[in-house]
Image (tube, rainbow, N blue to C red):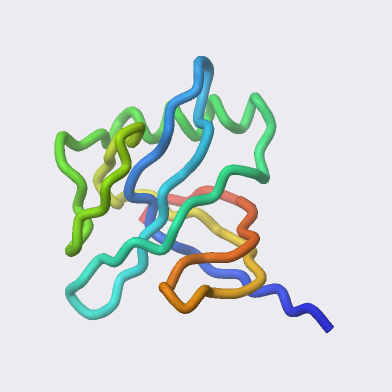
Length: 108
């Protein structure tokens, strides 16, 4: 039996596409640390993608806010002011989301 988990995670960055976002980078707050949890690249349509991009463009940051920086050359980093509601199947041994899907966006 497959389990599906759902969680709200802070958005820490995104990958641009011409009219919106191609992927969202997610973090997780653990105490004072903001850790990288992976990315999500599915769960929205073009209209929703453009809405997400419009919201994230208001909080773009020159540097990533993760406690332990990750190399993501295509990333546009943001202040973690928005949360993505994510459904996922599991977390890998590296602590990354497996089979994640975007379900909604909310403000902190």
